Image 1 (cartoon, helix red, strand yellow):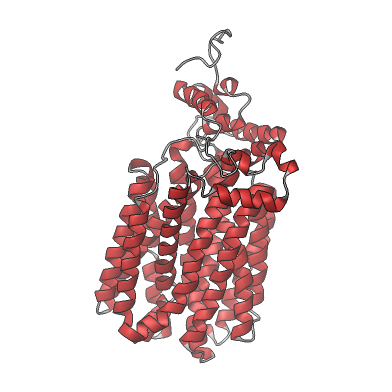
Image 2: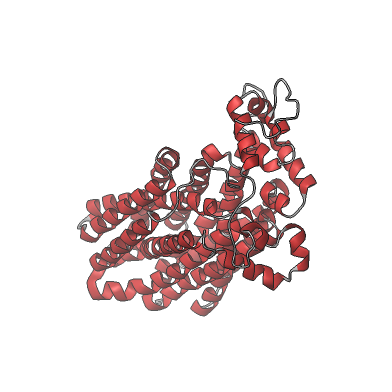
Length: 501
């Protein structure tokens, strides 16, 4: 590789840190996996688990409320949709806020908001009150998810970045399984079982303190805002952390002993400035209003520039395709899984038995994530996402035709496997499509568009089922998955590339 400074004397054993002393992000990208990487992934994953547990619990709550309160399905669907309306707004606003004040700050704040609101939901006295509280819960949930995935994506070494985000997404399966266990063991204990289940959902409020104190701020965010000393301190902590499988050596020692890592660091320096044009003639990084340029621009103008940058010539195709995928995946996933316990009960199963079947079907999510975690690095993000969406379409079609307990559970397990594997690949690819200054804005707005589908899906289930039963309902889901697969094929492939390229 050409020497970036051909006239300067070269040290005998150049290190990655020396090659990129002025660029903390390049030093970070060249590191191996360290214990701090693992701690960040697990810490973010616990928050993700609580998210899934909260979303999953509502499916069991509305199933019991249909019995305890005698509430018709048309009204119960609004409880779920109110939460997803909050998630749509939260995702859009949370992404913008995280690009302005930081990933960690927003992550902790959103955990606090939806944890407190979920606990308060246990005291709801009517459908209207529960809807209002679920809206507030959704604000926190929607803002947290894209921010957490962006934080992990910005810290993970490029060669395993996709896998790291899929592993983060796999915590969703853990949370949904916890929700199914709570639904099976706690909700049926009495008429107030749903209240005790929601009370358990207040745990994220406590965990918010751990996140605020224990997780680092994004190095790329700090550099983009001119906070270089803080960025260097965060990178040094990762460099001094023991490398996983490094025989006691630190991350920096393992990195600097590897010629490929030194070369990767130098290459990252050369690619560090994004070249994405924005409508105002600025690069997307400048359009984000970071660094010294932010001081002279109003906050409203900065927000407009960030949103406009998503539709700049170099980004508009991927933004459009990404929004299609997010919309379609949300519609089919939440339409199917939020109503699954109620659908099983409506097909003649007891409430407890429908909860049991839902728990079994949910177990298929974990192997789906595991398969996606391997394939996003071997096949790439785009083919993995498209393949799992196509598999989801087939599984939904099988569910539509299933007759009897065995076929229903088998088709449900396949749907869990492929659908959640697709979610993992989608969260892996989304942060990679945008430059740092608009990364959480791009991820947040894609998630927000997707949440509009999750608002519509619970409302669409009762009328669709009345017209054509479960068969028509899942045939529609299968068709929407096909649309999502087509959108996935239009996305660029960025596996292994620097996020700053």
